Amino acid sequence: MCGIVGYAGGRPALGIVMDGLRRLEYRGYDSAGVAVVDAGELLVEKKSGKLVNLEKCLAERVDTGFDVGMTGIGHTRWATHGGPTDRNAHPHLSADGRVALIHNGIIENFARLRADLAADGVEFRSDTDSEVAAHLFAAELRGVQIGGPAALAEAMRRTARRLEGAFTLLAVAADTPGAVVAARRNSPLVVGRGVRENFLASDVSAFMEYTRDAIELGQDQVVLITPNAVEITGFDGTPAVGTAFRIDWNVSAAEKDGHEFFMLKEIAEQPQAVADTLLGRLDGLDLDLGDVRKIVIIGCGTAYHAGMVARYAIEEWARIPCDVEMASEFRYRSPILEPGTLVIAISQSGETMDTLMAVRHARAEGARVLAICNTHGSTIPRESDAVLYTRGGPEIAVASTKAFLTQLTALHLVAMDLSSPPGIAAALAHVPDQLRTLLGEMDPVRKLANDLADARQVLFIGRHVGYPVALEGALKLKELAYMHAEGFAAGELKHGPIALIDEGTPVICVVPSPSLRLLHDKVVSNIQEVRARGARTVVIAEEGDDDVVPYADTVIRVPRTPALLAPLMTTVPLQVLACSIAAARGYDVDQPRNLAKSVTVE
Ligand code: F6R
Image (cartoon, rainbow, N blue to C red; front, side, top):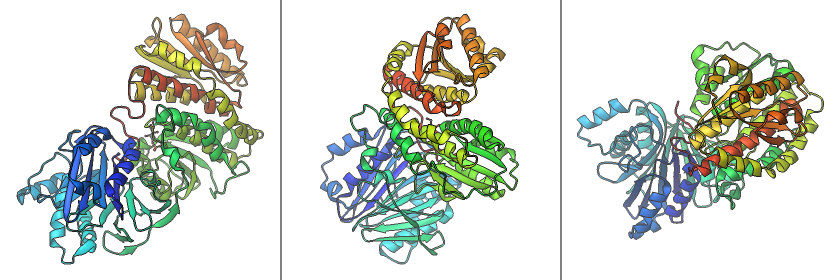
């Protein structure tokens, strides 16, 4: 949540910061703002709403300092404390307007700090928790005896020590051009190292156009960037070094490349993304998982659904007991984690706070943690015992698509590593080609989307691995098209949900592979049951499965796979359906209301 960018170098900062914000806008789009330092002057602009509003304001400004200043920070906001208004937009300024600060996270002791500052005569201009950090930082800066950039770092350390909660802070000062200082606790921040220029950002997509060299930071660290140096210390001033890494994502991966939405582009990228996840891994993984006697998978939203799918493969192939739990619930019920328990934490961003907290809990209780993650330099892999990167490339659309398929692929690789099921490696190797074929056959789904765009509700049913696919299909439709959509285990329908069905209710039925004869036939019966109550049935079924035809108003075909791999196919039409319905209803597919891609608050 909230995207932040900082730049200190030899080029005008504004363009670089705005480019970074464009790439980070998926993290929040309630408001955006920038601050640029030029020749002892601090210039600030901020605006509620999407980045385009800020761009319009900047286009109208005539002050040249804005265009030439070579030090800058920028912020795109997902509101927590205080509504999405101009006054709550970041940067926040000190009372004298000489210091600007941006924040991602939540400052938990802000009320007490705000009261203390107010008692000292500070006047607040926003309703945010973040503004206290700006005033505290300015006050600490006044008290620091040294000058120059080092003063910024010392003031930031002192500020960070007074804050509780999760935060990334970036600050600049009018009197210290050429320096940006940042602090990090439980909130993302990476450094980009260029030639006579350095960058700070929530993730590497913000600066990968300018440099491929990045540094991961630890928790509770302050980093000062100037054009020629990156200096890292702990909050107590102890010198520290980050972990350097190369960014292997390509720049065009973060562009729309002619697609109407990032989501469409990311759906189209799935064959390649799955191929990349598989590359060099089908013969085994380079992971030391130790003695695994029980597996607990944790994740949120789409990642949780990926875990639900994987449980079937892990238990069937490896015969290892496997639980799946929403990361947000995990640590609050004292889970039993014995020696031999492997916790698998799934996260595209690697920053989801619910998942991070669950990882910390699991490790504190003695479990080993394997992260399945897409984002290098992020916190969850850093805090886990082992990591399997999904190699999906940047996912910009808020709704996860290629992340889901690559998470499934990675999880199947883990299950295979624990068991070697016959024929699965060959079947997985074939999946990218099958996905290409499937994506070429989506016209009927787009047509269906037009028919369903005005539906009052859409229900999804499935069994076995089709059940999490039904949940995922419903989640996509809710988040993108703002429609009432629910996924059910088909067998549960008669225990209550079937009452929701009336004349014309669309029910999307994810049919198991006919190779699972008993289950398959039961779902065919469930389709008949809903149809008998007036449902309009849309059936997602394997090629050649003709048993479903008499009961389907629409059949969507997917290529044949081994039964446990079917979600790699059946999910795709549901992604396209949700995206197309949202577009038909006129909504912003990439940036649905109220959401942000990286959820760094609990
Ligand atoms: C839904 C979606 C979310 C994320 C969830 C976890 O389309 O994208 O449900 O899957 O917020 O995010 P990560 O994987 O970054 O931990």
